[in-house]
Length: 448
Image 1 (cartoon, helix red, strand yellow):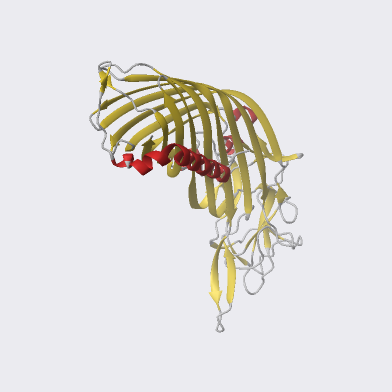
Image 2 (cartoon, helix red, strand yellow):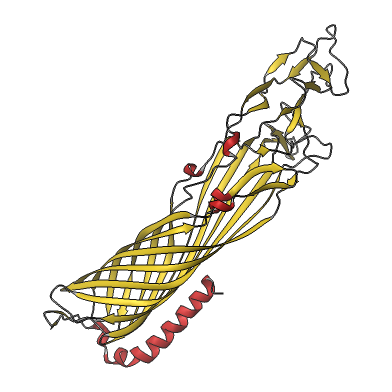
């Protein structure tokens, strides 16, 4: 299958052969330095013929997903168990020791931390991202002779969006009860045994990451081949009609990383020690969803252009009726526990231990690989302005917009459900989202 490296090699080979065989004689004669002299043909300017090729640098806006929540939508607002990390003295017998010893009012123990109950939120969604501008390349080469000709176009572009945050909450639909547990709070210096703070026994633990990052990466490229028919020049311009085949690949990767907060201590010898703070139930979690769209199908196109002196204006439109072979992969891990069975740490400032049902070293996200077959119509519009430097060379500046329906975007397909037989999953019905890509191009045109 073609990739960006093979595309580059193909273009270099084609350019070498074309310029060597078709342009050598004219290079010797010095025709490349001639100025363009517009001539009239049937009331309009005659279009150039022969071999042509262009190179354009792209500056396009790649759209971030429009659908998707980091967390299960139905969990938002549900009651969960937190620790607020405030100093407090408990003086009621509602607390018991980890080993089952009940509260003794004559001892009067003080604990670091206050266990509270509040609602679970989903801090991030697709709207958190902003569309990003990315750079790429587009290559076009072809041949015209009279009314008939052909062209081949190849483009490639890559971009990414990133989001960083603190205190990011993610709500999981915990059908298996993995997040049921209680909070252990450290005692004072006189009696440092941890205490279990009970409300009604085991409670559902809230999921919040002291630090978090999510990202969305897009890589798209395509190749098309068209047979062209050009009509006679008229006073209003020239029309070209194209019939061909087009392939476009749209790869997208959505990911989330959630981890604890920490600070670094240096001793007298300069040795570095990392202390964890702001514990969370599923610290060191990460998951990634990869989506692929493979579009292939017949394409119809039309192009109108008109030249006035050294300037020309071109408008183009294309329609692709594509078969779209889609695939999505989900993988990752939830939580990273220490060997003692406590979730995320046994030392550091404001120690808090969460005792729950998550096994040591976390839960592996159930690997998911789903495929779909969709019909994806796509339209493309373009506007280009050219300025002829010489008879053979022109510079061009333009805008392109592409609108594709029913594309797979992985962010909106992640299911944050923890069930007995499956850790997270994929929403199969969420594989159809419309995409609009647009941006500018600037390049150089050579016409033999």
